Image (cartoon, rainbow, N blue to C red; front, top):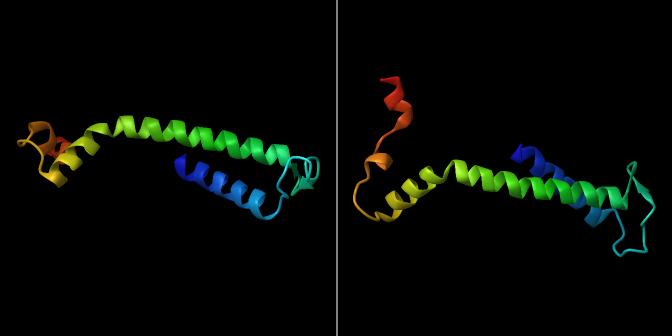
Length: 93
């Protein structure tokens, strides 16, 4: 989902930057590739908001991994049993 939304935001951003004239009066109701300027901005904005929401959810879901990896990288604190176990290989054994 994040990759798809990224390409939507990047694509609409490039179209708006290179093809649609800037400024409110210029090109407001002109159709570009079947969509008005307002529609391009709406798609770009909604996809951007969804990216931010999904990134926050992604970071929350992977918070333990981020914490353990940061501690391991900077060698902060004592060895933690939670950070030292490999849940993938532990489940296989």
